Image (tube, rainbow, N blue to C red; front, side, top):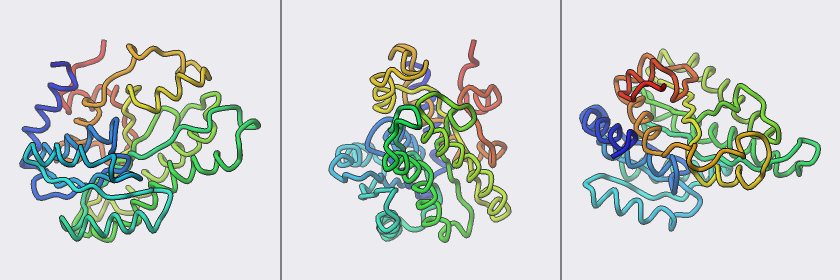
Length: 269
């Protein structure tokens, strides 16, 4: 078993009591980091709503989590559509109760290309999904977090450093990083912990699209240089437990030595 699998197991055991009785909503849960995070949260004791545009794509994951003794619900959720988000949140509350964990994972990388060559509609949709979509989910769950909660916004190095061909993605993630800070300032005193978490370079469908583009150095990384989804998923579950408190209100990276020590990951060479 690799580092990610070992860590997922340790966090699942440590977090089962910590997350028992809690309710999580994971956006973009049909694959990649979203699916792995849903598994990690469920293994740690949380009831998990799996959100994606296609409920059919979530069915097998929900069934598997349930077969493993967890509680899972597949909900149709298009983060770019506020009504869809509100319906998904209402359905989750009806099944499990108030949501007190939100994982804003849904995202898109396209359009990839120099700003002057991008289709304006596609550029705007990137912001609609990556930034406004996260806000839609936050706005919908905050009323139920009167007793506190955890919000993890999936961040990226692109939030802080521009990359050729990624103007929309960089702008969206930079906005999301500021939203994380704003929410921490507004709701931290009410017990709502907000994190911006950069999971590193993970072997996902988004990375496949990046490789196909041939734009900027990230596209030239081989699959062998990418990490798996289990380690960042387990760290997300860790952040939602009591151990995550010191990192609240911050943009944190999976390579951060302090975070790695706290979450039980091996130090990087």
